[in-house]
Image (cartoon, rainbow, N blue to C red; front, top):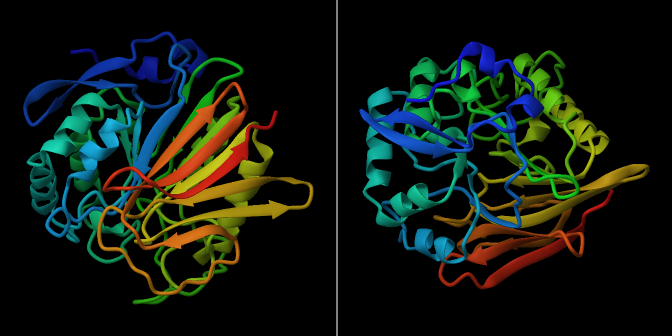
Length: 352
């Protein structure tokens, strides 16, 4: 088994870029190869298309969408939260939920053939909307990392939280993928069934360590920067979990993305609907967000979002991104889980 030492983990990204892109981990007692350990660069791999999505209820909806996505040939799969809906704080329940997923042939085929990066949302993290006060956060995180095939030498194994980052390709075709953990370190949400706003600047979503890590990641050069959050960042008018509950945290994230090099795209889930939003500010680069929350149980009730430019849709969907390096464009789409037909689409330019 190949496992990185603590010294290896402390090396800079550039020093590790030539390291092996595959490591062996142990899942359920057996060895398994996992591609692309976190917090490293992979200059030999140029990304042009990948899939993303969230919110799956295997007991309530057909799982044929896994094979529909596979037919498109994604280079990566980004899971944005709520892989299952165990809604429990018990470790055994989380293991059982992942065990049920493993029985789905399309899910297993996807995990065996496409490098997959995952973060969690509230339903596959805890019962209710627990944040940092989850009584079993550490052992459930261990289950999450194991079941999502995170190798033992991966940087995510050495910290609290399931966040990670990857840079693919060489200049001028670099894509950075950043997956944020919006639950493990989050302070309690104000309210019970719906949520207000917490203006206490001491309260946090990411926690100090993850913020520091994110700042370091955003110093890396990239032409395209994809930031995945299980909860919405731009949409800020509904009463459910969102970055706007902690407005100082939202503003901090948006400032950092605007200041970093490259064209930023935010991917989010959670809402059981799909939409595309865009923030334009004077003297600052625009920021686009795609909410792909459509594998199961869609909602079509009206929900205000003044930054929405496409949608919303209540059709079951998954997300798809095409990066056209020749024409310097990023096409973000929401595609039908039935036949991959286009439901929503938007194009951003890759700016220098």
